[in-house]
Image (cartoon, rainbow, N blue to C red; front, side, top):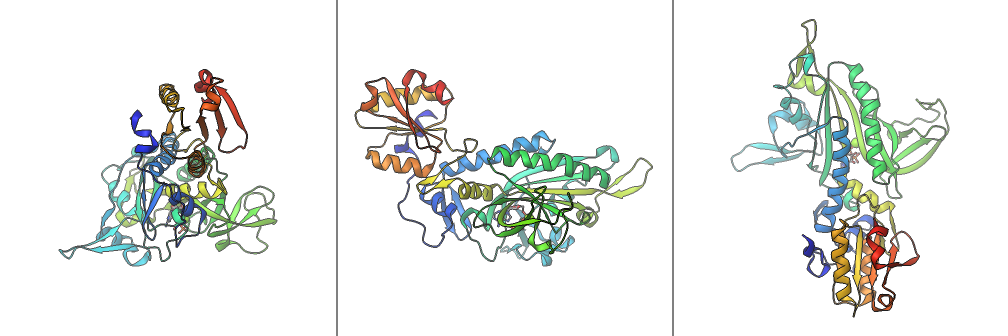
Length: 412
Ligand code: ATP
Ligand code: MG
């Protein structure tokens, strides 16, 4: 592993030219920085650098879903038509990708997985003693979006975490929804350095609302109204002039634009009744299982993070999701010492991208700023005389000198 993170050998080339069609900041910086490559509108390859970032985001989501008892599983992308007909969504869901095979069979490409997870629970849930349960997956979704745009913010093929919970009654669902799922979501976004605004939206089948988690960005697609007193927001699609905040009763709002990074829904029996998912209660009565579903757009999150954390030179990754912690730049005449420092940092368990390329300092600096790794270390003859290297945080302007023997502990 250690020898692969040399930039000269890495599957990475930055680019000076901006992508032609897409003007959003995340598309420009992620493509120019060599994180992703556009394959077609709304469809991207994640190159090694970009896959590292996405994996870190998804691992944070994974940890927080595990912490609330979510059990990870993995469902297919290719779905039988019958399942989608059972819920009426074969015809009813406009963004559903439909495929006809050479044998004449029809399939859907999964845009979400209620149609698979609900029948999957049939052999598992029989009695009230089997409830509650929560399963989730992190997976590629397909949606035939009319306009795929803004880089990772709206794809036709994108990544999502979807969790599904199963309960004996509405009370149990609402308790999980309010006191377990919402705080877990807030933990996820906090760890990503984001302030996600809890927002009431339509789409709840029995609690009147679903809840979205919205992050304010200049090119967000949603308009939301944030209560100036308590911070709870409402999506424009359900907002009425003069309406009072459901949490604090205030009617003073601030309008802003944001991107939806998560959405949670109390589903009640919408899908369990379609698939006959029932359980027997303590008195022996058969009842429909009560369900909830909880989505997070992990690839959209990667785009939102770039929209929030960048400057004129490039990306400024939060440490929790940065592809590497250190970008080590070796200048002419100092390569030998840089090799030693590189190996010492690796031994100390620090993730390092080592720019060992034979290019000018200007090119190395520009790439380091574009790629946005949190710490930049420069090894040059100039400072080696003092047994030191230059250390600069991507988020700050100051450059400091650090003694080589103290480097690992300073970075840690
Ligand atoms: P939108 O209103 O943005 O179209 P949605 O409400 O249809 O999204 P959900 O079904 O709630 O989406 O999906 C859960 C999450 O998946 C969303 O909150 C969002 O973060 C993400 N997501 C949805 N559609 C896309 C897409 N086309 N590209 C990237 N991420 C998406
Ligand atoms: Mg949504």
